[in-house]
Length: 112
Length: 112
Image 1 (tube, chains in turn red, blue):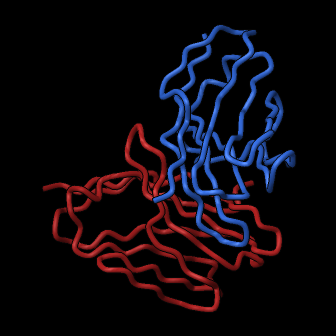
Image 2 (tube, chains in turn yellow, blue; image 1 turned 30 degrees about the horizontal axis):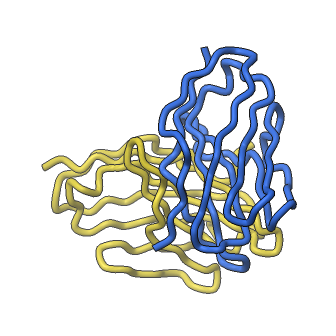
């Protein structure tokens, strides 16, 4: 049973608009969350993270929102650019257990 | 910048062969990980190592073993390759006590 879910396998967005990628988790003991971005034939690269003591973290065009009661987080990209086209993985950690659990990924296409 | 290097980008092997995947990191990270990435399944943890000569099973260790004789090097071994081990293999490293993983570029392994 997947502990970290990304229910949209793919998403298409027009350049300049907002991209919203969603992630749900089942384990309430997760206390740290990360987003990774992956281009084809490359390894994932770290994008942004959030601790469970916060509900928002922002870095330039990227903002991550955390709703602990709903066990839901989302990544907002504003404005979206063609170079953002990639697969985005949500990851969760229970720091006392120290294992990183990844979701299945969402493939984002930003159309010029 | 952290550099995680995987020895091969593409590898083709025959069923039953013994396969070695090598990973080297240059940032003196204590923790190292092997994941495999499959469509719709995300990144699944095979094995990880907290330090030299230490190893722990991940979620899908069957059919794999690992070796960590030096801090900078973490090897994944497929004892007898099978077709269901065709996958993208990703190595990652992390500083102990930190959450962020740094990934290599991946090895696309095809077992025929």
